[in-house]
Length: 145
Image 1 (spheres, rainbow, N blue to C red):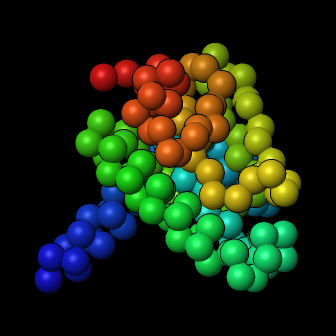
Image 2 (tube, one colour; image 1 turned 90 degrees about the vertical axis):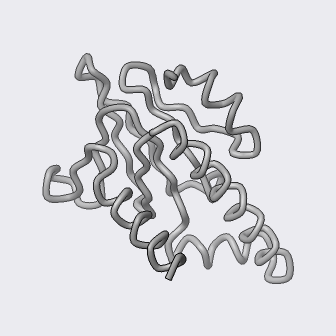
């Protein structure tokens, strides 16, 4: 029962999180526009997972995936405690919209991106963080409290 409640809380939190519009809010399909203070958790989709398995090797892949998922879970707990809105995505194209209206595009369809977290305070460029060091990265990204 506790797990069910936690899962529902996570789903509710992510569905109410960052302000964003998907393809319907932008003419280019697959572009996610993000505004306001939040964290974006990128997890590779099915196609990207296949590419990563080939890149990392079948034997190493599961351990790498598990370690990344653990770090993402720890970061999620920390950011939730700081009341940072969290958005989960597997979309390749992100557009962060600053309070000035400037748009910062990020294309995740490159081999250097696997499991990623971006912190966005709404006015600076988004920061791709080292998720193993979430507390320092949070402070350095000027996320507040």
